[in-house]
Structure formats: structure tokens, C-alpha cells
Length: 494
Image 1 (cartoon, helix red, strand yellow):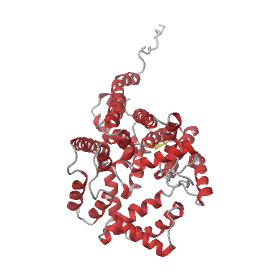
Image 2: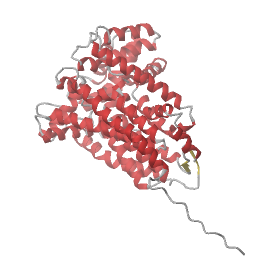
Image 3: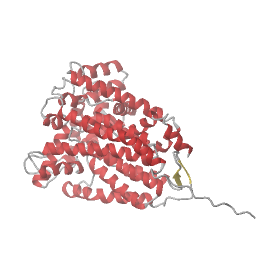
Image 4: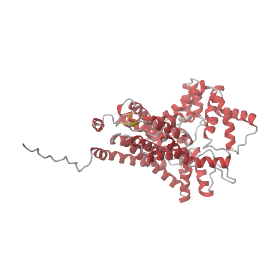
């Protein structure tokens, strides 16, 4: 009998796996994305020739409040917006972003603004890198991941907001980290990833109150994952591995540990155990005011005055120094005006949601950023336009918005608006197109945070509030951009 010839096992090339080779080919794109992040952010910080404080702080009212909170934290160890004692406890703003700003005050007070903007730049770089990392862990090709990072770097909206001291610049990378950890739990089912995702979701709540119910949303999603694991490049399929029934409770417990001290602090100092009065603030100032103004044909300020008079008649004189009870009372009279008119409230809300997507950039802050004064009637323009749209007066809504925001604007503003509009159209077009591609199935669960953070903005919707989900929109758009990528076809065949 002859002997069977021995065969040598195949050798692994020294150059590494095919996937590592693909990553090396995509590295120049990622490097370009990081460099463009620096250039686009510096362009808005340095241009045009307007005082830095005007661009970074004065252009958005929220920035002034965050700076006041950070200054008091650094100098007086108290969380309050007041400039003189007695410092009333703040219950509207949450503490995460002011704590970050306070670090710049502590390090060097005279250079506070420069240091804070440098931190903003680092957060922008982190957002671009985390977009790349999340794309890879969602099993997009390295080329698609690099294109997504490049889109985030090029976004005029994100670049513009990075030159402002607002919480969205911290919120966006935190959201990406939370989703990255949640995705790792989807893939491996490891409890440490789930706990870390819960902690991160708690930090999101302490950064922006709009995230208050986000831990509940992802806990419900984790419960849905019971008995499922993702297949490569596809949506989840049934599997023998089972997610423990207690997993959502673990996530919620981790989030609660982060948020609970803040809720207790609010209860002790104000008597109200709440995360924030933001929802009460918004329903009075925006939601109910918009519906009431559209219903009666009055202005937004007049609608607010009418509700204030109603609150005074119902509760007696309103103590504006006690913001905790003030917003509670104002919200009590505002809710019936909003929820009692569903035929008007629903279209107003939905138009606000669409504004969140379709607004290329925030024109009001852009005007101040460029050293111009907003035209008369610019205050509450969005809410006034929503009221006109809800009543079918589309031409009047767009004509008013154009006259107030764009008419007579300097060339700088017109160029930025045009670029932002073009980028936004590309993002929406390619993002929607990706939903019809097989390769996007593994990303469809990301529609949960996208819908959550747009639907909840409602009548205060604006380009600024799209910022946290814009990296996710870039992920979807990148799939369409790279649909003819040969490396994607090769990975799918594997």
C-alpha cells in the first residue's frame, strides 16, 4: 500500500487578515476626516472677524446660561445661574455640560473661552472617530466607515455648533459611546457592556433632559433581544443564546445610579424630585403657545401672556423667583391648550419634527455669529411658521421665514446656508436610499434613537437639535455612497 503524502498546512500571510488590509486602505480616508474636522471647526471659530465671545456665547442664549452655571460651579461651588447671592438652585439645566465647562474656568480663568473651544474641538474629533468605530462594529466595510466619518467631519451644521458652548457637542459623542456599548451587548451578550451602556445613558440624561426616557427605550429594546443574536450583515435572527430577562433591569439600575443623586439634590433644594423642568418649560413656551397662537391668530408672545393670565387667575400671583413651582403651574394651564386641540397640535408637532431634519443650519445664531443683527420678528419665528404651516398657509410660512432669516444677509451667511442646504439634501437623499439596501439591515435598530431624538423635539425642532443623531444619519448615507464597493461584495460572499 502506498503512503498518503503529507501536506503542509497553509501559511498565513505576514501582512495579516484581509480585513486588516482593507482597514489599512481606508486609513487615509479616516485621516482626512480627522484633518477636515480640525479645519472646518477652526474655520467657524476664526471666521468671520467677529469677537470670539460673540460667536461662541452670544449667538445662542443657552450658551450664556451654561457659562453662568460653569462660572458659579468654579467660583462658588454652587449650581445656579444667578450672578449675585442668594444663589437660587438651578433645576432647569442638568449638570454634565456645565461641569465640563467649569474645568476650563478652574484651569485658567482668563483663557476660559479658548480652553473651552479646544475641548469642543477634541469632542468633535472624538465624534468622528466614534462614528468610524461604531460603523466597523456594525460590520460596515472599512471604506463605508471612513466615508461616514468623512461626512461627520464635513457637516456644516456640526462644525458650526462646535464653535458654540452648548451641550450638543458633549451629547453627540456620549450617544455614540452608548450605542457602541449597546451594540457590543447585542453581539456578545456581556453584562459589563450592558452596565456601561446603562451608565452612559444616565450621563446622557444629565447632559440633556430630552434623554430622560432614553434608558427606558433601550431597556425595552434589550428585552426585545431576548432569544436573538445578529447574523453578519443582517437583522437579528433566532438563536439558542438567550438574553436574560433581568438584563433590562440591570441597564435601568445602572442608569438610575447615575441620575438618582441629581434627582435627590433637586428634591432637597426645591421640594420637587424631578430631573428637570425642561418639559414644563417647553410645553408652555413652545408647544401650547404655538397651538394657541395658530388657533386664535395671535403672536407667540401674546399666547404666552394669555396663559400667564390664566395661571394667575387659577393659582394667584406667580412667583417668578421660584422657578420650580412657577413652571409647574404654567405647565398645568398649558397642557390643556396643547392636548385639547389634537387636530391642530399633531400637524404642528409633525412640522416641527420635519424642521428638525430639513433645517440645514440654525440661521438666527448664524446671523449673530457673522456680526449681523436678526431682523425684527425673528424671535419665535419657527413656532410662528409652524402655526402657519398647520393651517395650510405654506406660502406665507416660507415667505416670512425667508424675509426674516435670509433677506439682506451678508455673503458669508448665504454661502454657509447654501453649503449646509446642499449637504443636508445629500445626507437625506442617500440616507433614505440606504434603507432599501440589504447592507443596511444590521443598522435598522439605529432608527430607534433617530426617531426618539427627533420626535421628542417637536415644536422646538431646529438644526441644532439634529446634531446628536447626525452621525447616525451619516452611517446610513455612507452605505449608499459605497454600495458599489467591491470589498463589501467580497465580505458578503464570506
